[in-house]
Length: 410
Ligand SMILES: [Zn+2]
Image 1 (spheres, protein in one colour):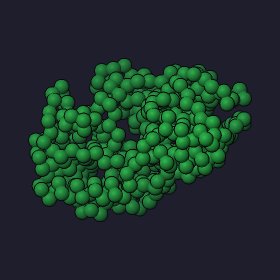
Image 2 (cartoon, protein in one colour; image 1 turned 30 degrees about the vertical axis):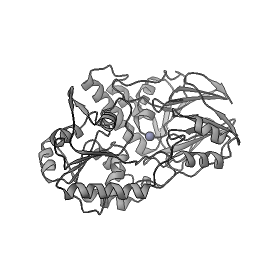
Image 3 (cartoon, helix red, strand yellow; image 1 turned 60 degrees about the vertical axis):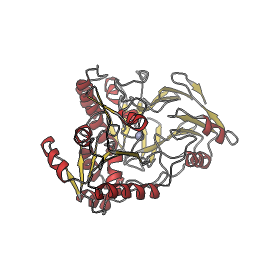
Image 4 (tube, protein in one colour; image 1 turned 135 degrees about the horizontal axis):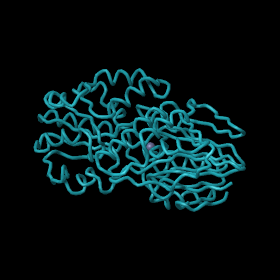
């Protein structure tokens, strides 16, 4: 059996793993890094038999439309992942058009991919020509799955992983396997206590409202915006939602079995005012106390409209809720207190703070998942600081730190 990363081995982004075993070629995730311009993994082999998609985030799904051009490849994922990946890949094409760079695929590739998808349930086993693969929930976001391939060895591919239960989804449970291919985004780093973070987030918003300001909450459309809305449920704040998260909400509402508590999710959304058209944004600006909107790193989307209107108001706040990648506007805001909008640098007077609503397991939880898997080999991927995890795991198992493009045997 050999493994080869097309991308995403030593960085968070553009993930793709090829496993060759007993004459089969299997692909696990095929994503792009949505920077400006995006970066792409190496091309997938043309003889892929089956591709498995752990979840819909673009760094895992963004290149899948190219698989429509491979003659025999089939693509397996949960129905929620299929629906959200369709939305995100279409949006990636729109962004490419707006920003003026060459897209890696066409709308017809996305369309053709529909015929190649097979949906599997959250605890289903996929069997095809001797290939057996089990799906099991990975926490992280609704529909996210760990994928257990039963081959010459049992290989568990975690995709992105969260072990603590959140409002939106339950936590992942460790699974036994021979080889664990595990994400390591938070290698060496722990998250602050989630309940405490939520309490501080709500208190900060309340203080903003009390001094007459509005809280702008930039949030990623898939997973984060919904988690934030559930955190704000029953606070009584006037919450407005704008951006692509609206479409994601509809997909989640139609798939209640993928949510930790579908009734609570619906109730949280019931209290939220949805901005249906750009023309409604003035109303949102007038009446909202909290505006939850994309993009999560302030690099585009309706958030820029709201920030443009409110940045001079010292009573208002910008509360970031997600990871801010190097080079993003959100990172610039955190590090230097400035934003670049339409080539103009502005200095917001608003209060700025970042809250850790991460959907990734922290270091200790990753160590626990690896130990309880009882894997003989742990392959650390999807992380740029993997040494801390290696040091923690090496006493009990063999640890492999793969490099992009280099095949290795197991
Ligand atoms: Zn993810």
